[in-house]
Image 1: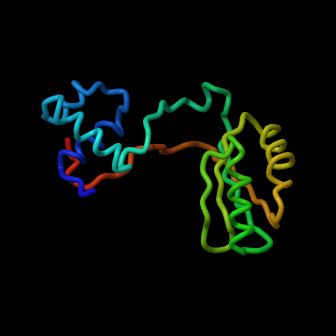
Image 2 (image 1 turned 135 degrees about the horizontal axis):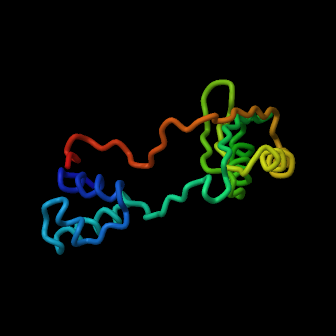
Image 3 (image 1 turned 90 degrees about the vertical axis):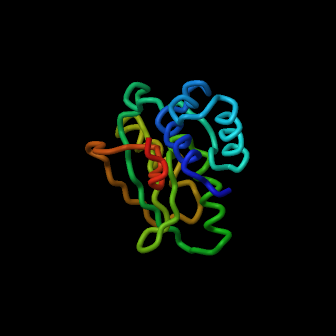
Length: 158
C-alpha cells in the first residue's frame, strides 16, 4: 500500500491517541468523517495498522523492574533458534525479543516486579529452555525515553 500525506497524518494521530473517535480524527486530519473512516479501514486491511492497545504504566501494575537479558545458545541451527523463539514467546514477562548479531544470539526485555521475581523468571522459566549456553542481565536504572509511535515521513506533519 502506498501511503500519501493524508494516510501519514491519520497514522500520526492514531499513534498519539488510538482512542480518537472517527469524527475527531477526521477533524484533526482535515477530512470529512466518511472518507476518513474509509482510509482507516484501508490502513487496517493492508496491515499498516496492526492493532489498537491501551498502554499501562508498569509501576502502577507492580512491574517496576525492566531488565535486558542477553542469551547465547549452544548452537545456531534453524531448529534450535525456532525452538528457543517458540519457548520464549510463552512467557508474559517477556516484552520484546530480538535475534541479534554479534556475541549474543538474543536480546530480551522482561518486566518483573523486583529482583526476586527476576530470579524466579531466570531459574524457573529461562534456564529450563533447552540449548541456552549463557545468560547475562542488565538492569535499566532509569527510563529516559519510551515511545510506541514510529517515526513517520515528513508527510505526517500535523
